[in-house]
Image 1 (cartoon, rainbow, N blue to C red):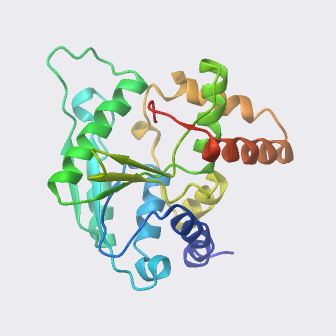
Image 2: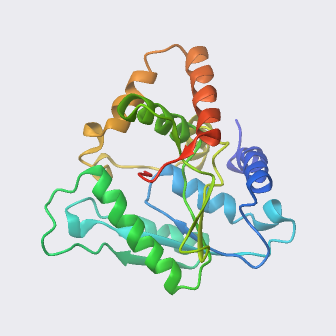
Length: 244
């Protein structure tokens, strides 16, 4: 049976490829890793913690940032994440979601994403970070492309790298070449548990999840081919401003 370390070693090859091709990480970077509490962002933080395996000299810093959404009526991930951050020995901060007084609840997926990104970016800037890392993977890129085709009639993408505020802050996606199946395998090896009560209650109402369930109707070989084609389009396509 594969160990977490052996799987991490395998995944790091894809991370290094993305870092190299898109110039995602440079010496001296201070990177805020957005950790939602799910398997993707957890895997991202653990993989980036292998600094020497990614940049050679490990000359970058990490800080994990979690945006709590309990104030918006969503599950509270803080107790589980705080214990995990401490065990991982990675500097971390938990910041609150800023809800305007007139905000209507419950938040829809787009609005929740928008507010969490705003809170994450503000915390990253305050902590002196020049980059923010998201845990989006190849399947996320593929689904985003299909969503844009179906609902907008155009090809948009999850950019591996995107600059904000005249280059003061750069969003990076080091897992862009890693598949969800690979991350799921890593999560199983780590024996991570994700209780149902911590899942987003609106998860199954999202357009993204409808498209994901549609893709599951294809057999494995077809799904892999479709995912690869859509992910390729995502990397080559027009940048989206409605990022998830």
